[in-house]
Amino acid sequence: MQDNRIPEEAPVNPVAPVIVVIFIVMIGIEGIFSLGSTGLIGGAQAVGWRLGALNDYAFSPGFLHYMLATGDFDPRYLMRFFTYAFVHPTFQSALIACVMFLALGKFVGEAVKGPGLALLFAVTTIGGALVFGLIAPEGDWLIGAFPATYGMIGAYSYLMWVYYRAIGENQAMAFRLIGILMALQLLFGLFFETGMAWIAEAAAFAIGFAVAPLVLPGGFARLRQKLKNR
Image (cartoon, rainbow, N blue to C red; front, side, top):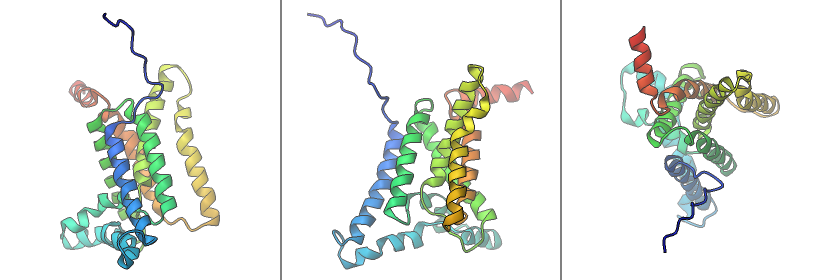
């Protein structure tokens, strides 16, 4: 007997596989560090795994200044523009950044396909580090997934900006989320030493907003058409 029933839609749209993979890698690395710090894996030397990873993969403006001054673009220095996003100073920092990245990645992934999401993650991560390297003091360090998360917030804000324009609402409402986060960050900065990571986060947000129309389906085709019409 043929089953003509219409399949029910899932109540929650699944998270894009690209976002899931990035999240698993981030949280998996943090899990190794956390288990190592408690002595559950790796023995006594595992206590220093996090510090070793920070020394090997975190980003500092000093690397950019050195490369520009000497012309030595060693891959070991270049990779830090990207790898810093996968190491965090604490478990709490990793948990907050990764959960935010997963949530924002889910929303953006409902409009942007897998390759576009991967490009968005890479461009905002690298771009945030580049701006940080140009502006922040040489002794500061950039660590963790918050710039990549702010890049997703930028893309999400663009999607909301388009949505509010389509329904005739005030498009400034699209920037409520970034406004709230920046206000909270300013508040925390009054009581705690938060460093200069906000430079990378703000840059990644702006890059995410700018790149979003290009990574949407048909984005590059629309760009080519606009360039032809000029």
